[in-house]
Length: 341
Image 1 (cartoon, rainbow, N blue to C red):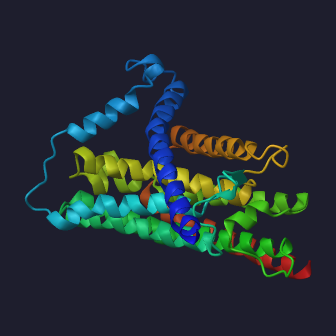
Image 2 (tube, helix red, strand yellow; image 1 turned 180 degrees about the vertical axis):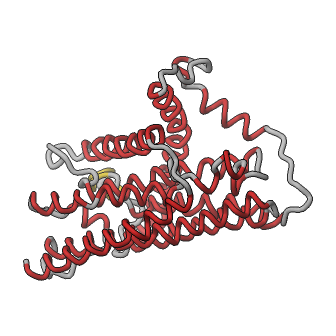
Image 3 (tube, rainbow, N blue to C red; image 1 turned 90 degrees about the vertical axis):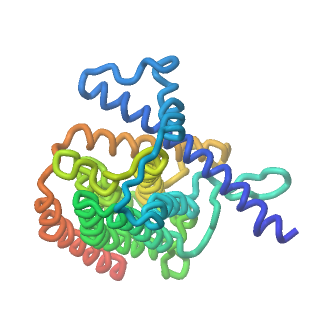
């Protein structure tokens, strides 16, 4: 029976998670179009099926069957590998995110997480960093100056904003020492979500969220920090030479990164699946997690529709002159507070 617990159940959960994520990505594009339409006093998609709900299906069919042209001057192998290398990490991030409490099903206790590992947050940081290679590789293999500039911007953004994001996560990990019996803290996202914290600690954790959210915008390349693909400067950036399904994979990667970053933020800052009456009705946990995740995605879309795009040098300057020092100060204060308490 060990192979069922070690192989079969994780495989089933992985397949279900991938299907849900890919479906969620498709309709997240519809949600964004509708919301931005409302923000700009437009109707948004409304032609394909009722309320425009058929648009994601139409987009998928168009991308699958659209004729693809690959320029002769590209590196064919690396050009084809780029989208896949970018997509895989965006899916792997969700492997350690608990989307619900442990439920009793078919005579077994089944946790609503693919991999309950002790290094959950470290896995998120490592996999998130690897995803940049797919973007950089695609831009370099395109042998196009605009694509290369977009790839370089991706790496610069990642190197810059990964530092304050990592420092903020370290500070939040220090707070977990107050919730573990031996005071050692934990990297396990399942344990972090289950951890009971006093109100004043929640208030201190939420104080770091605006800084963390800015880092998430830059890490995911979302507006107003979409410099790797900004159309008024780089045509389409690192994906200029891509079309058909390969372009769709890069497009998919962006939205999956938004979902993954939102899932991590919900788990670390807002209690994940926890909420009223979850102990009595464990199934509510999945509903609470979904509502919190959608609220976080709404913040992404709201920011993209409301905040104007700065210059690229302003983006990097903001990181190194404000965000990075602020994250260091926050971590230092947190460390002193944890030691004193």
